[in-house]
Image (cartoon, helix red, strand yellow):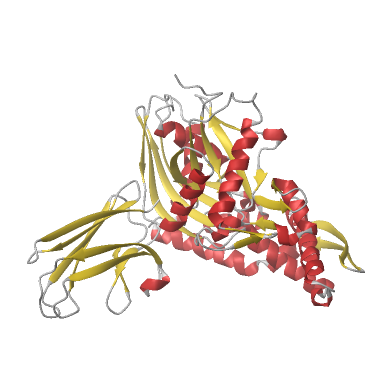
Length: 495
């Protein structure tokens, strides 16, 4: 019997700037609100005096005065599990920091119940669709390190589509819609085009196209606006007496920048007051929405370009998009509405789901789906697509693509290669994921070692390599060499 209160399945949106968690109640996805807060800032601070870690808003504010003791935006570092993050006197990996945030979120939920009563039976955690295989694997490792029972990883736009798709679903609902998820968070940007078809028996989610940038988001906007203000105010941080004073001043200014950026989403002007941003220098000025938008012009144009490119890759005209779901805190910035209106058309933005919470809600729905606790009569199916190209490295170091991006899964392709050395009896087939023509500039997701090749002159043996990508985003690599009687298959996980 599913215990939706004390032992539910949960979904966690592990965001760059903010994170949120939801549970499946049996009929809906409900956001957890520990201490009355629906979201938690994804920030970690180490207090050298108490030897304790602090999280969330308190951590962010503590980091203003002690910038060497805080970590902000760790999600940006999830592509390198060996990156060293110094917090105070200690060194951590991105996986360590992400695990701390996840554990804090879970323990905050536990604190809402009497001790020993609450224990979630499983969790789904979200990642951007544009994350590559190793970034997804690092996220999964962080979930396990946090002590959570990982049910699965789901891409954020699919989670948002789940939240939308089930929001209006009912027994008699029939629809055929093309949905565009515009997911702009603190650190990443995803565009995903879906077709949602629903009848009396089924709800089908089909990914038509994917685009994005895992290095584009609100953090970049904040930094550009801060640079603009520094230049306009003529602030000289280099004149600070110490590096600590310089860092503290920049962090103090960043706190003000974030607040005024949010305020400019609802007003045309806003005041910035920062005393002693550097000793003896104060900011006491009005700033306009137009100034903020001008400061991020390059990013605005990049977002517009990605949106257009994704629609082209999906082979869908903008007028065929029925609704746009805005997801992520930065999607609320007014200039994003203008981009959507210009490219997709006016009046298509759907606002009945919360941009900052729907990903966590969708993750909770997916957790219920995976554990057969969704409790709806209709059958749900998901048809995904590849976000990045998959290929192998040739003898010249080039990336030879077997599976192109935006291919519906399951996808399959075979290419024939030749041995490039005389009498070689083994070969390493290196598998990469990404868009660069140079193999090593892409993400290496695995190597398949083939041994026992029949000795032969260079270029005389035909080696057939087959890639198959399933709906679960697993790539099966099969290598065949007829004369050597070799057929080897390995499975590499993409998410």
